[in-house]
Length: 142
Image (tube, rainbow, N blue to C red; front, side, top):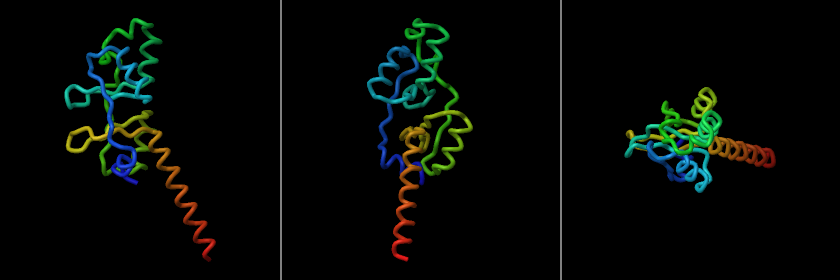
């Protein structure tokens, strides 16, 4: 299965914050949207990803004072991207190797969606279920 197919099912909603917004504002966005990460965008350019892990690390290191500092101080600036034509297998390997759970998807240098590890797992389960059903049908017909 390709990234484009996952985005077709999931939708292309992307939630983002600006690098100069406070960590508290970003936390509010993550909480209200019930998501695990937000893209950090400067205009239409992705400059980072801020995940729940980044927030926990910031507060663990600096205490509650971290919440008033800018997102840019804590975001993951080395962003790993996905392309619409990549397969789920490639994304699984990339996410596992890099120990990341969210991949922004770019098409022609434009952000068109975000794929999470949850999306990948959901896709894999659906695919395994389809295969099992096909085998059941084949055996029953045989």
